[in-house]
Image (tube, rainbow, N blue to C red; front, side, top):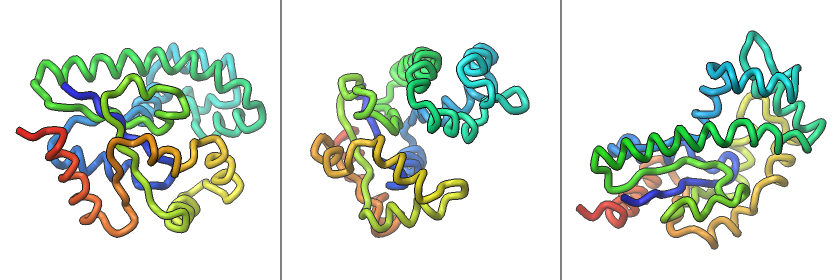
Length: 196
């Protein structure tokens, strides 16, 4: 079974691309959603984060907005947060892969926003990078609630450039045209990854 990494910079259309794979019947592990679930439900994670950044805990959950403000003020704490969260995500991901393998999947998709930035290319067999034009990316990002121009620029500065990601990709999905067009690109990739 192939393990395929799906990545792309902010507002490139990665979540939509992941949902296209899901709609076609393929299994997708969403690292971002897994973190979201841990922040809402995992009492050990919530306790550990409260010790790193007390203001991030609101209503006995980790508030991502408050946490990102905490990180913006002190970027050194991100390593502590990753040390808490990443091992748990690794366990969940391994369980997901094991189940998919038992079910006879040809490949699974790991939706990992910071695949390159966290040096995890070696954990996957193939890499799909989702891309669009800088103009569309910017417009999509600034259309999001709670995302200011400054925060968008800050996030971009922390991510590997789109051109560099595309150079390292095995496959590219360009979401600039339409969902239908992106779906056709995904179907071509699926035909290669799952020729059966």
